[in-house]
Image 1 (cartoon, rainbow, N blue to C red):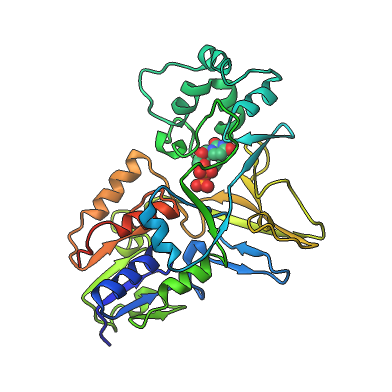
Image 2: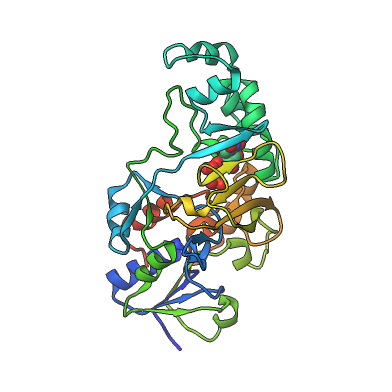
Length: 359
Ligand code: UDP
């Protein structure tokens, strides 16, 4: 069998790329997906009560890019959604990211937007260089908030200490002096009206796109010829771990159903200091679904299981670069696993819509 392109993986990266190839090159694209469903880590499904469950944890679409927004809007309508997160420290809920209310509630103070800088100024540290997560947080707000809100969450999540992890890990979590309690402030923020799976099905719905589910690329690679491969799986796996395993963090989701209307006040509550889970997601909040039952997922990070997060330490980036430098005209690596980048959905789509397709 012969096709023009093989795209490995039907997550957001593989799907967007497949669609561009189908639209712009007008050639045959085969999408190979090892799971029995489309969507990769964005996969969601409706449970018996009609609640959309995100099987691989909370995915909140946001972007500054009008181009990205317009592209995805061809394939879905949107549900307005502003993500709000609380964090549970010592049994109390606080707004996350840290804002003026978090500071006042945690310290029992009554700073205003004008005076809160007094607290920041007298508590923040002054490292000569910002080299790690600890430096980023302590240099903004000081050790007390770092210990209570970041230190243990980050260590649980990444399996490394905050001194070992680079600043970029927490770059997406601001510290605010105002009362804005949105997790993200992007120009566009929403959820696909009928879920991510439906949006991805629509992206892949094209006469030039053919899909093989339940198929490991390794099993078909010798029987299907193609001109070029776009690979969204782990790059080290593709090369049979020839330079050793690239560390990725995995997450296990423990789903629980309760015969109550609401388990927690918002869709995501973080648990930085206790328990082996980092956060609990209650799915019905995303689409404001009214049901008698509710479904939650506790998120337990670990090093076994499907790779979810690249761990961007310098050492790991060097190992990635060794893999990426292997001469290979035939394959382009894309997405969070293929490029070993801590991308959000919006960032992945933006990166894949840039420029002309090289192959
Ligand atoms: N983080 C933290 N405490 C929190 C929330 C986030 O220490 O309450 C740190 C942690 O290192 C986390 C990173 O900030 O991995 C990025 O957080 P985000 O919520 O963006 O993580 P994601 O949704 O990508 O897992």
